Image 1 (cartoon, one colour):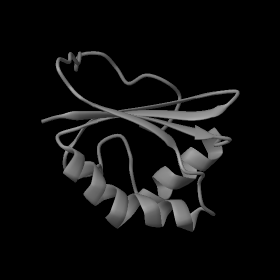
Image 2: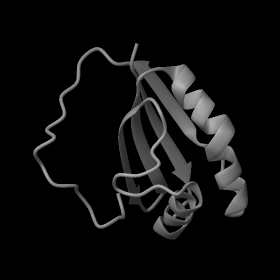
Image 3: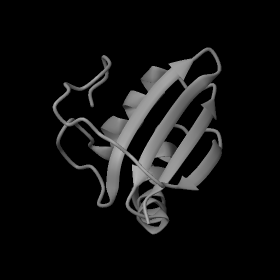
Length: 105
């Protein structure tokens, strides 16, 4: 069952997010992990928010252990996020829209 993860990282800025993406080798169409359905990241005065939808919790956990945690460590560490997770009941994605935002995704 698909799972949505809402993660809040206090004090994390766009430069740190971009450094993690670079460490992971992520780009618009390359090197995204098996099982990810969608990814959105944004910022406010408190820090960074990430909303991911994954095919399963196991897919996210495997990515976190094998790639994400080492990338966090490589850029100097990130604070533990506040995480809200829930099973996806319904979703919609308009693949005809261009990518949003000014990041590299």
